[in-house]
Image (cartoon, rainbow, N blue to C red; front, side):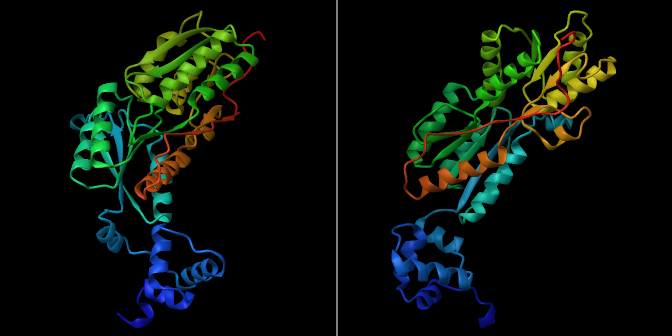
Length: 352
C-alpha cells in the first residue's frame, strides 16, 4: 500500500500530538481522559489525521466482536408469502437510529429478523455463541418467563440487552421506550376537547409493548374525562385484517364519533374503510393515529397522530449498551417524549 494512502496509526497520532502511544490508547478506550493542552493536541491530531480505531484490533485486544445484534421480531408466515404480516412499523426507524449511532461509536449493528415468539431463543443462542457484545430486541410483548430466561443468560455471559418499547426492568436488561402512556393520554384529551363523547380504540392481537401502553394511557385518561370507550381488536397487523374488523362497526348507526388507532397503519386502514362506506373523515368520523410514519402526512385527509421518536430510541439503545460494554453501569430505563401532530383527520364531533 502506498504510504500516502496508508491509514494513520496510534503511533502517528501520538507523534503528532507529542504524547505517548499508551496515552492515545488509554484515551481511545476510555480508561482516562487527558487534560488541558494534552487533550487539545490529542483531539486535534486525531481530527487532522482522520484517525479511526481499528475494529479488528479492538476485538482482538478486548475479546469483543464490535457487533451489536438487533433482533426484530416479525409475525410473517413466510411459507404462505405473507411477508408483511406482523411487521412492526417502527422497525425501520429503530434500525436507522441504531446503525447511525453505532457507526459514530465504532460499532456495527447486525439486524436479525426472527419469527414471532422466537426472539428469546435466538437471543440466547447469539449470547452463548459469543456472536455479539450486546443485543437490542424489538419484539411483541414477551411473557415474563421468557424475559426471566433472557435475564439469566445475559447475567451469566455478561452481555447487556436493551428491550425497545418495554418498561420492565431487569439486571443486565434495560428498557428504551417512548412515553406511550402519555401519548395515549394526549390522544384522549384531544378527542375530548373536540367534543367527542363516544370513542373507540382500534388495536390488534397479539400486541406489541408500545401499543399496549398507548391503549392503557388512552383508556385511563378517557375514563377520567368521562368518555365512553369501546375496543375493536383485529386479528393481525395488516390493512386487510383491520378493515374486516372495522367494517361492521363503522356501518353501525350508533357507531362512535371518533377512533383512536394504536398505530398509523391501522389508522390508514380505518380511513380507507370509512371512505368506502361513504363516511366523511373527519365530519362523520375522526381518526387519530400513532407513530407519525411518513405516510401519515400524505394520506387524505392527512393523519392527525402522535410522533414516536423511533430513530432516537434506536440510537439511545446503542448509547447505553456501548457504555455498558465499556464497563459503565447499565442504565435501567430510558423514556423518550411523544409529540402530538395535528393534521386534518380529526375534527369536532358531529353536532358540536
